[in-house]
Image 1 (cartoon, rainbow, N blue to C red):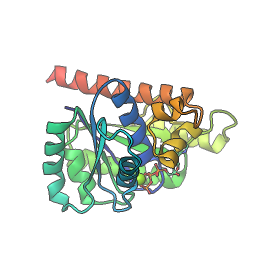
Image 2: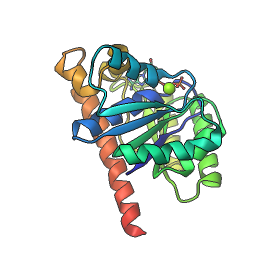
Image 3: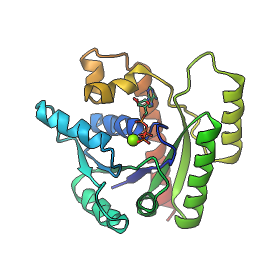
Length: 226
Ligand SMILES: Nc1ncnc2c1ncn2[C@@H]1O[C@H](COP(=O)(O)OP(=O)(O)OP(=O)(O)O)[C@@H](O)[C@H]1O
Ligand SMILES: [Mg+2]
């Protein structure tokens, strides 16, 4: 049962949105997902409890409160979640902290979402150093987020280039799209946003499917090589 941790100590880079997008597409394939919400803001736990109180489906994607656990307890929580779900996603807090490190150590893959800004890039490099030092053998990749599909500035391009040249990076960007934002706004998964016509989702879904596919393929290749 694969475990994916989403790590980025810069706030607002798109960690929780990415967790929902990946969970949405995995659940749409018929899989079950457990998201461990390790952020004290509890954005995703609130998403889940609001859904429960609205009577929406809570079986395919479950969100578990991991925010109050001690740093060293996150491994046990991941292990338990693996018994119940086919995919485990850890959504971490937007600060540098040991809980994220411990979660990453017990993960098959770590995604580092980052916007095309120097401030995010500095934190991305910090996260990368943490992974290299503390989590040897754990695969990771940077995901450039919240970029416009058209009309991008040359500064953004330069920063993207710098990221690609120095860090393992997804080719796919997680563009700034209404479909992604609609998930947290409406307490819906991406397919639900689509079905209910709350926002356009074609592009967002294609991006989420592509990222999920790339991660699952990389995890499978790593397992086969062992
Ligand atoms: N690809 C995207 N398209 C549109 N809106 C996005 C996208 N990614 C994130 N957002 C919006 O940006 C804001 C921050 O995103 P999000 O909460 O996912 O970041 P985060 O990294 O989890 O933040 P924190 O560090 O505070 O937990 C939210 O309002 C979210 O809806
Ligand atoms: Mg978050």
